[in-house]
Image (cartoon, helix red, strand yellow):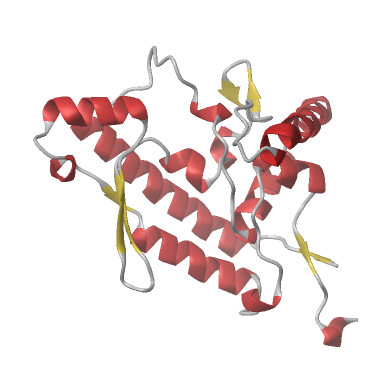
Length: 208
């Protein structure tokens, strides 16, 4: 197996994509007047799956910068998360367990948080490669605000994720040397990405 690592160039590119996500997120929450302050819910206990080697590698770029004691604590919580999630998943339910990166309400890797963590909660649109358009209403608090302020859900501002997703897909292909179709698909929680270690793919035949 060969570890998948981001080059300095790709690290800069994924950081720029995340920055664009943040700017789009900030614009929408400002227009809607959405805030997480005093919210009774916590998005960090939502069940999210992540799907790219590039984000997995970016996560580990941040994990490797942590103090050893802090990293050990994150790994311990990740193992507990996986153990606790087994029963609800077996029963066909999504577990509601705090993310192992959350420490006393704060994200241990805030600067290295993943796509879903950065964009969750606000209205968003997405045009898929097949041309189908999708719209996401946002979190429950966002939906309440939209219902109060706008006649229709589609009148509310929404962040178009399409271009950023395409950029991330292109980066993913470059990271995997245009062989993405040859490797297992990623479908993991953050806890699984932490416990399994940095991403790795089978070596090409010519490198064995």
